[in-house]
Image (cartoon, rainbow, N blue to C red; front, side, top):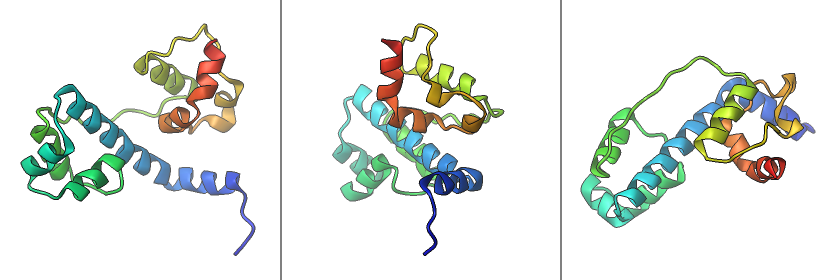
Length: 141
């Protein structure tokens, strides 16, 4: 196996769209979990409503499965919600950071960690930011 740096692997994954795909799966899983929580619905109740096994619901909520839009709609409806799909133009890293900060109610005094700005981070995914949330929070302090 060739000696490939983590930076190379991430760059290749970003260029191939893998990070966007996995991020979308996680976004859906997180949104569905929040919907279950808001509606005080258990994973077992969701499994029953969807007529699937509890392990399948667990896979969905972990973001471990590539769902069809039909399954996504069924899952969200079973959890008393509705699915909205949003297609948007690419954002700059700064716009994406601002959106994440606003959507997660993290306040910041105009200070963004330097690791998240600049040309090399132009393709930064918002779920990559979530993985580094402690850096955002420390910048806000």
